[in-house]
Image 1: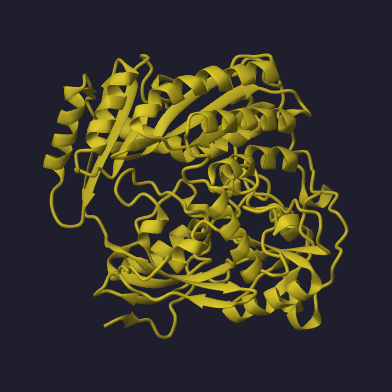
Image 2 (image 1 turned 90 degrees about the horizontal axis):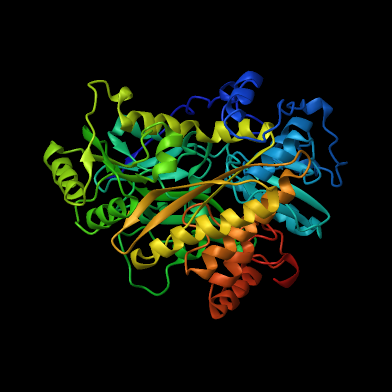
Length: 539
């Protein structure tokens, strides 16, 4: 029997004060001195950091549409709300915010408190020709929350953060009904008393929501087996302009195309996800980790392929190439590093970790000597660097340094050629655009029996005032390279607006026709997140 929580539990603890212009928590941003120190590692970086403008100094465009009286209590045109909901957190978003470019600011920000409010706001927007851009916590790095269509009478950013509860838990079936606006930490804090966890921990965990994960088909921290949020969905509830869709809650079904699959990855273009029944797991109590160093990167790749095909399913299986290992501070001698981790809620895991390490050793890997304190190990160092990376990216942006990251997936047989092509072709594009050599690094974020998901980082000095245009050219070159080598345009960051050219080439045309038909049927006024997945003028 479901454990139905009544009355609802207290709202989860408030999250840290978030930066309106950059990544994450405001108090974690780099200081001016830290920015300058970091930029000293990049020849050609600017000498002083761009100042962070105050919200009061921003030149926001005039509000074009007024809040209707019956909904005024749900809507805000306050400068702080409009500014903080203008962009996501991609490099080009951060740079434009630093320059005070708020041309894309929404006219209004909506704060629904329940599903009825979402319905009312959509009904009003459809009648008033107001575009609606769903907003979870704004961590999109692909232009997913920025309105660019320019064809509507106004723009409403729909902030779902008020829908943040775990409404029901079913301990027997290990599932819970969760509202879409729940941030990662708040969601987990509500599941913890039941001994359960969603076990989905993306890098943006503290600054992203369940609805955002679902709408973007997000990937979590875990590297094998259940890597995407798709795998954890039992059923979805979605508000569309044409009605509310509620799928049947079952462990599996062969009844036609899945209604949940229609909305997973739809990025708010077909409807607003308001809640979902999610599959949960017992909280792990046994954990073990290790790191293995390889002199040759190809040997490390072969080791990871063997592990991915072994059926041992490590929770963590991150391979860092020499540049990434050095950048993360886990290896300075030019080697590649494989970070392994296993966990279980039911019993010791040391023997499974030993099997994984043995497979890595068979391919030339040398297990690292881990110090007693986990925080001092390569595993702990990597984890700290991983969580800190977005703040470092923002610090580099303030110093005029271009930092681009893109992730993809391909089959194992195509990876070596893709890896070489990215270094060669994207490196050449950076040289052409910036006049300087690029730092190009790679790590595996997820691995499957049939292929890896490589995540590339590109760093190069930019020119003040031209950072966005230069980033755009580098991004286009990266997308072109992925397309030429049959790699997906994105593995876990969604399409948004920045990946649209690559997505248009990747998806089959018959599927595109069906998707456009679904858009016309569910959103006849064309108000939902225009420009994402479809061109606003052709839907």
